[in-house]
Image (cartoon, rainbow, N blue to C red; front, side, top):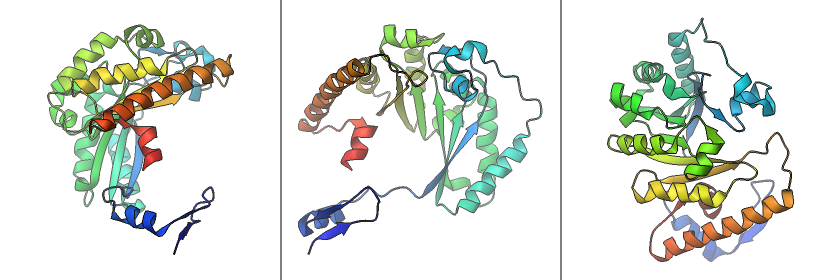
Length: 279
């Protein structure tokens, strides 16, 4: 007897019994029962990355971060925010929670991140069910390692924004230095217990393959496990869409060639999009 998969509106397919049996025999791929909460540590950031998300959400568009300099919040109430976060976790009725430290550049305020980490850990009933993630440029990782080693070592996932090898990265993320980020990730690697994800923002004119090669640099040194990329449309405009798609396909096919080569050697590349599709 075959099984129809109709629980999703965009799925209309039939699996044979043998396939269903194989799927049921696979373990370890259940979706986590968790809630993810973004915690904006600061809107401040000293860099001038092309396609700055903060500038876009503030309505500055292509003018970029140079015209977006948010003021320091004078009326912050961290105790209130932590209790509110704890309440959200309890009300979600999920088994776990992921707190995502967000910015700006959250590593500019590692003390604030540590306060949230410590205070939320003391909240009744949820201290053992909270994981922490940070999205960062990687330019200030050493501040957390030096001053807040417990926080740094217990980050569940550290997503580092790296847009390729030196020439491409430093041009796209002006003010950062890939050489300095490499040094700090190497030091961070000595204390971390969680995973590192290399996060690339693919803009028109950039090379996806160059971003992948930067991921490989860290992976071969055991300094990163995962690679993720997303596309920035440059204010919704891709001047040469046909050329963009051609280059993207060629480079993606080359990356998939590497993926298959690794599988043939019994190694597994954690390319987030690809593995989600396969699973």
